[in-house]
Length: 172
Image 1 (cartoon, rainbow, N blue to C red):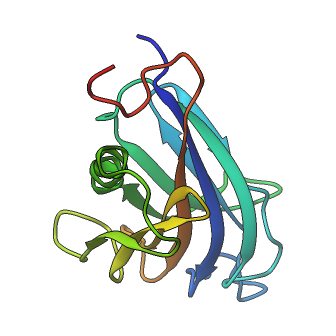
Image 2: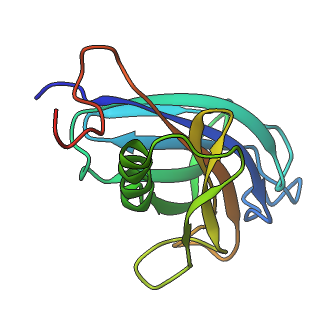
């Protein structure tokens, strides 16, 4: 299967993440994002349940329907890292908006192409807008973590076309 393009995911920060280090009353969190056979991760932030990563991770996308999952872990030195919650990154609304943008032509900076509401079918903690910014389409997502007592992660996604690849163009 050929590569369609790249998905740049900026993992901005975490909010109210679970405490996993009982001694210090905090955690040393990092994020792992997986899709198909790919796995990318942020650096860990020591002793912080509200970490700021601002780490840019990139996935090579071959299948637009392949699930993309996000898992937060607590870094441990002498034992297996503890899971701190999971979320699914749903890029389907983003893909629809990006395809619509290609068919519409030029749009003003800051225009919202689509709004996505939290629902039982996504892991959004609040409304997410897909926006045209400086010629790029971006979407910020506050993801609520599942399988954990608390926590959210703020990410931003952006599609990157690769010259000569199909990209998001359905007519390629």
